[in-house]
Image 1 (tube, one colour):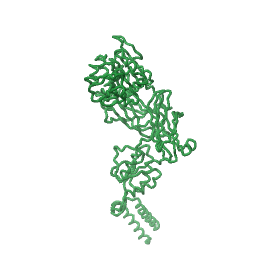
Image 2: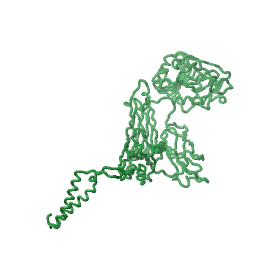
Image 3: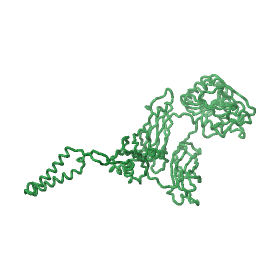
Image 4: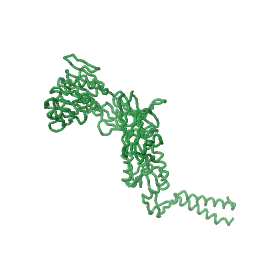
Length: 606
């Protein structure tokens, strides 16, 4: 038994020494490579969460990984495709962008443009941009589907970047889910549509079809030839819902539709985006005052069709102190850069001596009937526009343009509807909503912008306390909603927020309640739909390269640790470390205790 005493005491001493060292926790300084710190930032906390976890797993053996942005990190790894850098404190040492593997395709759709809203029977023009990558592709077959039904197709054969224009005509109100499919056409006319449909590129967008005819009020304080023929042109255009009232004598008038009895009916005027006024020289001061309130408080548009000199209250509204006039024998050409190539003819021209500071000339009349010039000192500015509050007044000084309605000499029947449509579209809606990307996958984000008319007014609200937004989706389980936070953008009346698509799939809508007004726009949430990227992925890569970094794809992740270590150029340095904080020191401690116990058993002491 004495033979085991020496080894037993030795093992006991080793265990005690290890325990004492563990309590003291000695510090050792030696040359060694320290672990660099790397910040792994998921651009989208939901959509990029799994890929960020894979990046962290690849790096954590060689680096100290922090799962958030940190300006003091040795390097930053961004995981995603696009991002808004504002608010992120990123390390400026080394930037690495980890993006999804790009599918090898001979072409891809890089842009789809379509109106967000249209009305039944109005042609919808869809513009498509296709980028050709494969040099063997000579053309692209571009097809358009609306709610799964074929609508139009075109074949383009431009070089590298191809542009296609497709058209459909919706027949009824509703939401149109548009899908554009581009098939490559190779040398010899072989098309991917027949040989290999998987190489096609797809993109989606959403168009809402509703009765969006612009509401127009035509009011004549006395009968006017100019106003009569303009009204007839508007009535024949399907884009307008026209109501009119013509005062034929004191207390007597004729009306079509349901117009207000007088222009002084302020609340009734708010229903119209555009008010066309004939014979404005016959307006009384009370009517002009109501028109000014309509412009300043509702943001609508007014078109004054002069056929005689004006003065008094109208001049005060327009901020004009005097007028000039001229007559051109047998009429002169009136052209507008905004409405080209449409033109009018007019012989009697009337315009201000000095225009208001904010006025903009819309059309000019040539100096002579032979002259077609629309600029210069001799070209009379007979059609102009000036803001009044948040609204706008358009003034026509082509007094007798109605006399030159012959289609061979004038585009009278097309000119005025085009001008009226532009003026009506300028009207400020009570609540206007714009969604940057109307087609999202679950977890994706997009920007929502809301313009609240009441907040544009001097006496309007100054914050977002009375404005709220939600994302609603209706399916078989009922209506579900999630809130969308809106914040003041810094511009009067403009609020912005970031909407994150929930895990629900289907047609949805963004509903905004602002004061007494409520508005909604549709959206589509569908992971199977192809979406056009916002365009920030190229900027993100360029930004990383400008900061000494680079971009890799998911398939290159296994080599990321070595590449990052080489880029950081980690060298040997004097590093202070604590050996007793390693779990491996438990092994000799356990072995020493176990050996001492075993020897005690052998000697009969246990």
